[in-house]
Image 1 (cartoon, rainbow, N blue to C red):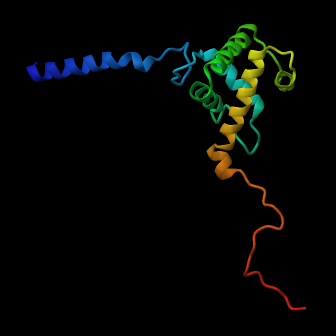
Image 2 (tube, rainbow, N blue to C red; image 1 turned 120 degrees about the vertical axis):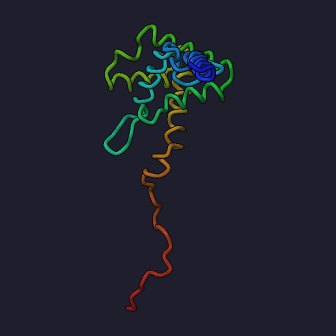
Length: 171
């Protein structure tokens, strides 16, 4: 074996060892990089289910899970909300994951659960804040998505557009 070949192979091997930890990822962490909040993969999947309940998949439109609106919500909470709101958001996700408050419910019960949390002033503050933020950010993410901007048909107000070339019959 020549010296250059040995050095080249050693450098390739060292580079592979250096990059190996970044390829495996931590399965307990969220799938995106967050700087201010710590969300586990279980909490991420819980948030995905909540987002899917807010904007479900229909025949003509993708659902919130398919559009990754839960990831948008986590990133917006991480970047744009105050530290207090971030702590309450993560605390509510932990409680919901630990107590299995949402995952065990049917579709109709999930909708009722979200509505009750948003309307009930006696509900725990962390859960109300988390639901309010989640609903706000999921809707924001949907309205700013490529699907909503390009494929969603917009309602045109009456009387419609002005057409100066429309033929008019003489009576």
